[in-house]
Length: 360
Image 1 (cartoon, rainbow, N blue to C red):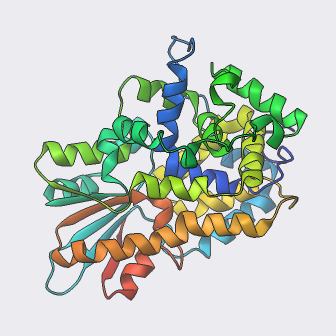
Image 2: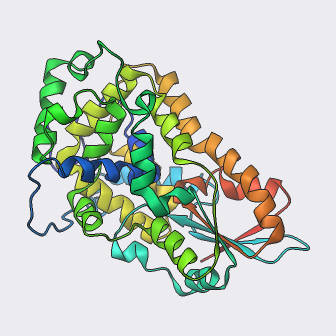
């Protein structure tokens, strides 16, 4: 596979829509990094300082491909509730609560909440995150690793058998660049290996040094200050969605993510900048525009997975949030992609009788 110049404007010939991979990066990155660090512990990982090297691609795209940029903006404009990270939640008889969209990253710019969001967090009696298990992530993930149905291939099934020779070699090369031997991962399900190569080097480096990603920082801070901490899901519930994806789809996702490796930093940097600008609505249109789709695999399988990953989880979150919001005084921090859209948390909470207002 080859990359054209400039990167991603007429991109690598991916065979799936990488929007799905982007969703996974935003929602399950904190799970993925555990495995990366675990893998690095068995190898000779580089010790030198690793800086984030990615560049925002939108400026170049606007100059070199204005039609694509126009389409991205049009698609973003059609997504409701996509231009704010912080939302005020009100209902008669309950104290005010807040909804905040997070990005599961250690980027210091993301960790720095704005003044209004920080005030809402500090004043809250209850902090709600996707999974309260993140405060002891290593212990929780070590326990889940004992469940082979989640993480390991069945007897007789191999990664080499799931991938073409070309894709297997590509995955092996990318793993070697990370200091992860193929022997360490050859019996793991492809989604898990995907997680190991979908995380930028700088993110791994910061977490290895003990820097918490935003959601964990908020969760541990809540406990340290005597607040009540609540979770809306278990890590097993989240992992089961990914692990339940058909193996051929997992394998294709892995191979195509490996192909994207040379420009992963740029894609991540662009998504992070959009997040910091509060433009959640532009993230998925950007990623979709930055990739090509040939539809070799069952698109229905991908659609089902994407639905489970975001839409179904949104409904579960809204249901589990209701009794918490009835008492009020909560600061709810969940992945930013759960907020926008007609099936997003804002619309679901409104349908439950809450007044939900953007705070920019």
